[in-house]
Image (cartoon, rainbow, N blue to C red; front, side, top):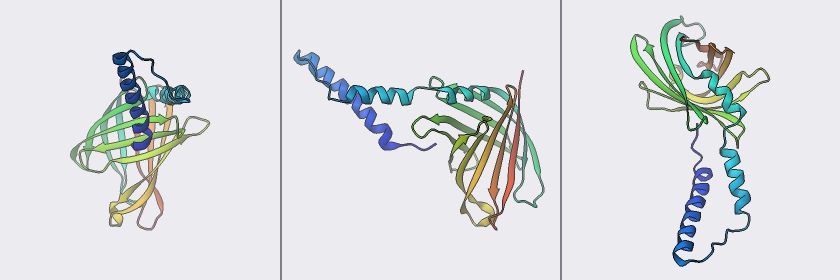
Length: 205
């Protein structure tokens, strides 16, 4: 998830400005004139900031889940299997879902966290992932097809190719209220795409 500096700062500065004007108006006992077009701009900002139907779809991913993970370092590499748990909750009034993952990676304890939302302005799902084995945040944007399956695209360094930045895609499929999955497709040193990781989640009841 990218931080859109200008897009965030300008509306906030505008709100702060209105607050200062209001204080001046009270202290000087004079009416405050709202700049022309401000009402329309504020209404649009509030509309873009409100959760919608796309955010509602994320609620299906909230809760506690077990995870079965299969990972491959290359198309012909052997599969590595592991298990984990996921705890996910909606935050900020249903605008984002925050997920905490605990498991193991290559025999070592592993913990990661993700934030996923939907950008009403871009009309895209947005995702950020961080974990305790990296100082890099993986950020991607996604679109949903008619079935509700969301495909995210992003870029990340390929450790099997000297850290070269390469595109990847991640497909999130919700089977029902208790099962969903993630498939992450990466590119190897020859730029051939392969299924590098798949995770199957099952709700804990």
